[in-house]
Image 1 (tube, rainbow, N blue to C red):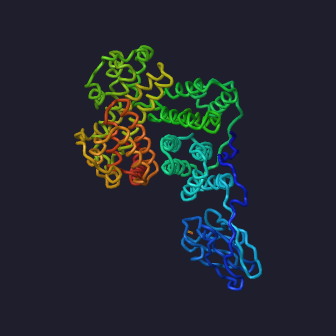
Image 2: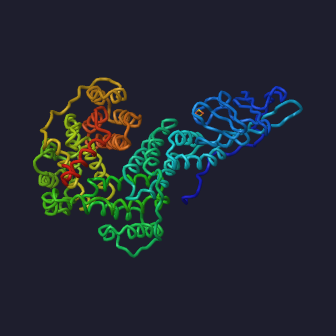
Image 3: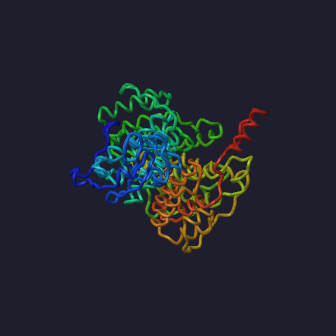
Length: 570
Ligand code: FES
């Protein structure tokens, strides 16, 4: 499918006559110019309007929130819905102020009778009218329009993949530095939508679309280059040759290269540096999961843009504070690590404890464990448990310190990264993924910064007890949320946390994105580690107070920087 196609309806249209209802709705002699009256045609409520140009019939339900247009006003040829001041041309239904047109119906005058015919649209007609409307909603970041159109499209038989993809193909070419959190959240939202049915799909899709629309609003798309197979992809990434990585990606797609081989190149590229503070492999995972859902034939809409992210992300391993750890990682025998089997009998209950070291990045601890029988998967299990425990002991006093920027978001993405490395190991194992596992070990250590400065707080524990997780999240009652999670199986607890994450219990996009991604990753990691801990950690994050806006911190840091020239403390 090309980027200009409109997905098709699955429903066979019925004849127009079968779909048309006709009724006499009043007498011309009863209508003065300026009158608006409600009438019924079959099940539909119709606003019958007389203006200087004639008698017109519109759906009475305002397309905004459904209030009756006849409760509004008529100004010359303009119907005004006074609830939120949307305005419609009475002759055509065209919306001249607001977000979408109102349906306009055929009127015939038969003697003194006003006869209105309402033809119900076919699913195909609904789809044809709604795709452009959804695109306009995404472009303008009108959540109401996105939500209404998503509901219409689902009702008319559109697939969740087609709906979500409208947001991706709008936002990806507008992401100047490449797709990021908005794409990753959208990917998880599509995964969630596909695990649900009926109306349950709509919320996940609209959350995904809202993030894409918010981030892309007001931005112009950039042009992609022509496909070019000449550049070496890894070298082009290393050189930050953006045109090169985009052109090479497009050449792979044009040449029909094996998707698994292309995926390997991306995972390899995401493993050569500790990219984007751990986000490099997360965004790679989410890109390829999205493409699994929507089909490889759509890769050209996303993959060259994701290549931009890979090439332009920060290479944290080059920063001074990571040098000591990088020296250890460079000494590691990645081949030996990737070939080390996971031994069934291997058990090291204290490994997660040792990985939680707050004085030095536990790279040798990690490599020793892998070689002793944990294998890469055993290391990832221990990292998932350790990162959960760090979340369970994150100090809320530290969270709200104005002079310390460390907070929840520095910890939550350890779990998300571990899950991304696990994905990479599943689909493309090798020494490059062993290096990613060591980067994840570093990231876990880096999430100890708050503890290094302010001490280690006691870990929260749970006593299984029934409870409503969404309410506990809403009222930031973390103990009740933990107890309720502990009382459920992984599947139910994970789904309840995802419901809470989707339910707008947070204001900032970046926090919603982390809640959704963490809940999804925690569900997977609970299954992988056979432990409630990742879910308990996600519950604590969702149900705890947190800093959501960073204006004050930015002002404080900026004032300090302008006065002293010193950068903020990490
Ligand atoms: S319901 Fe008509 S403008 Fe809001």
